[in-house]
Image (cartoon, rainbow, N blue to C red; front, side, top):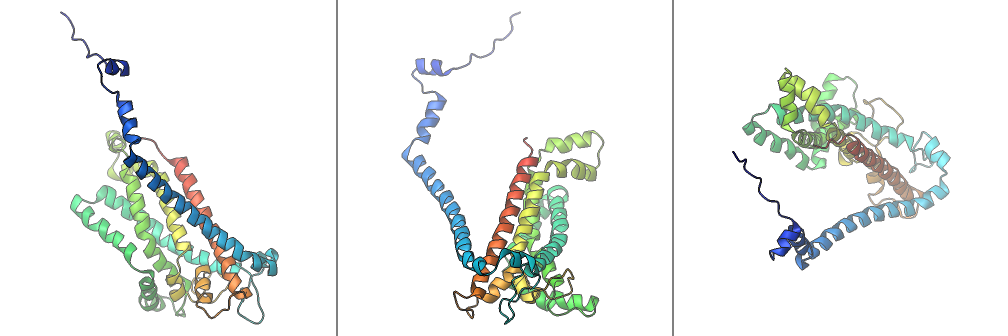
Length: 321
């Protein structure tokens, strides 16, 4: 009994002999069309403008910071613990602003990272389809709330609640600002982490169930480690967003540059100082005016380092499926 033969394969030479164009030639013709070339150059121009904008911001910060560092040595900038550029007795110790920024960032990370990841796991793995359709847009709606609204929410609602639980807590404190900054970045953590979990193939979860795993074990021991690169990237990007937050810390945390790790005290973040000096009362060319560019340069370098770390972590732990 004869066995059925497999259909003959079609090569580029066979297609050419029959007068047909090979698929590769057709793709090349489409790619070389004027419309495709115009789209290519338009997208390339957008990418180029984005890079030029970043380089322009960096150049402005560096150029404007040079006169400041000509008057204030690096030893004082990174060695002093007091920051009083607008006082008669001027001090330019960046650590007073750095400690306030890091204190708010740590508090916001403690709030946002576990809540955001738990929300992402629930939306991706436990929620029904109709709950997911309602919950995810509702959660992402938090990202559209103006930060000034968050700031007054912290000042008029969160702070009084904290004062009722923590006696002696001042009106302006790092704790209230950090909590509300954490609430603000929850959508970023939840959305990016949920996308990372959705990108994990269902076959990995099916294999875990086949080995006798429970739902919780399949999620925690299989799917979350498989999406680790995307989850870590969401963490670092959210923390970078918290470092650069301005209005919430300006309204809720106060304007007292102080080297402290006590969240009950009033502090001043780097962004809040830039807002304070940029209101127009400080003349251009003065050391006080130049200090905002030095602080902005430090803030730019911190966020740049955070994004580089996020990219490296993503590449290091990215899984190919």
